[in-house]
Picture 1 (cartoon, helix red, strand yellow):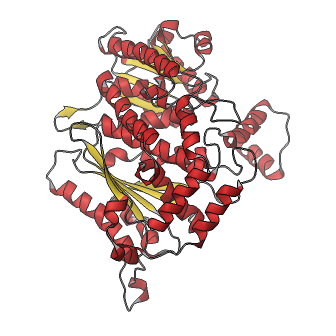
Picture 2 (cartoon, rainbow, N blue to C red):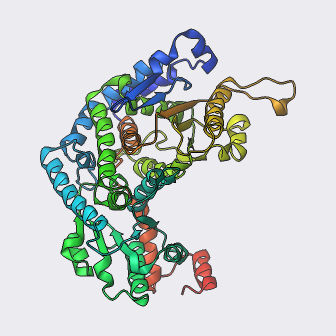
Length: 510
């Protein structure tokens, strides 16, 4: 770690740590730590970190840390399309997919989007016959982003709504996942999207082959005529059998867990329609411009990173919890697990030196109010200090009696208040220590626009954390070793430890 950042960390560690009660007694915390982020036409998101332990002294020191870590320079490099992934010699140009970035990359993204929009509209118009179902196979970012987006934005409601095409996202190589999709689809009305950056990912390609077999066995003569490829390797898709006109490319500089905005978002556009997908992109672009053009505490993703680093580095918190008080966001904790832990779960700096402190905490969570009856016991009375993010929407996603949503939001806000205030009792088993932190992200409504901004916020939060920790968030070599050993097992001829050998023999794998 550079001497300049080491000095700032020492400064931060030396600061007093008042309780939340003391901090709220000192002044107007809402003015400093709660802001409304405007999107368009009155739509917005409230971000509130007032129930965290950030105070003016910590904020000032974190701003100095950001300066010492070169935050402005690394952010500028990100948006300029410079190499920000040094281990792989790549840029990270997901923001260009939303129209914010290097001019040439933005132009290419627009061209690719135009190609995708034309295909989406043609399919909706019947160019491939009657299409009622899409099986989308991918893994990691090629699956999590589309699955979350479709689940969040394409549900039916009292006014009808729902998906224009029924989308099934399949990532697991476990055949049960694919068979579940088969059971829900009519093969005569089903198409296949194969999402793979390299078009070589073994889980994805194995699943894709099985879908082709299923289509053929169920009377689809030209099974490959039902395939759309979403890839940064178009030539491999064509070699596999996809017609060139149904290959939707994206740039090599778009990483998997940041790829929702590229052609990987095809199933989202198919489910929602292109206008809604365009709104998703624009919501993310509004957050991009805010992150690019705003400095210090006013920069919302950077402010979130200040709180993250406070708890990870200064208070020793090993986990961070996310609870969506909205059934439509049930997959958000899963999505953030990959985004945050694959990006920042590193042990070396971007210069290759060992880090001298913890990096990414373990991200976990669930859905309120279910989680209140499962894991909140630990949050309120356990011995682990866990910073919590609550996420909710003012406008409900249902048309039932209003008390459903009123009770939901009341519970969400009550949990944050209870974690902070606690409650004394003469009975130790009934005592709540309080002084436990939370932040709240409150959407006016869950729309394609606000959802895009929410996901882009978390992408930039992850990047800001990486800058403060001086690590590279854009490689993921940690996922490779297990894959390579699995290939050795498949190939045979390699010996392993006694435990692994015994398991392989017991399962009949060798």
